[in-house]
Length: 243
Image 1 (tube, rainbow, N blue to C red):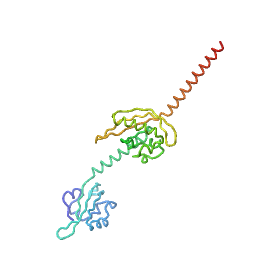
Image 2: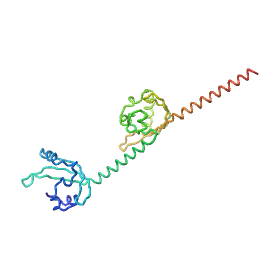
Image 3: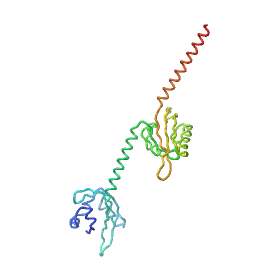
Image 4: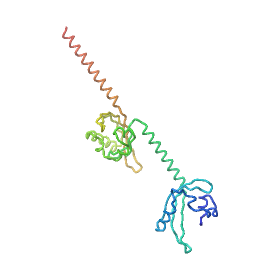
């Protein structure tokens, strides 16, 4: 076994200590399978993988490794190139945790949160949107609106609002009804605004608040008001006739 100084530093040992161990002593067994790797190498294929390395000093680091067969001094030898990717892996893990936290936050709100593309297809939805449609988050993504909304007139209205947001690049606020796949009519106060991507494309960010109960209360109040006014008119007419 030969190793350059960088390999000794990476593995935390001296060349002599490295020569006393095999590659599998350092690499995770789930990532490095010697028999399968040798089979690939005998077929003149380059073996590449990522693994956790336990250094001689007891430290765990993430590495990417590329293995290839070379011929030197009349012999067939195994060339191993390793690169420390610990910082990259840590950054990926932090990103995953951040994404999971954001997903937890948007799914915790009862309001509908979504992002749509220029064809009015959902690119992102929270759990509240999925529950309103009576399906899963995954089932809503990249679907044509005509396949999701049961009432064609509502699809036309939604597309028109989306068009205004994209073409005029301005926020649009609406209060409108929506028929769920189960046939229930619900009302929403919806805010849609343009969301510009780094490449210059524009998406639609939307937040919708269910105002169904408020609308029902308003309708009931209006009906009560009209009933009272009708009763007053009837009373006035009755008194007028009596006099």
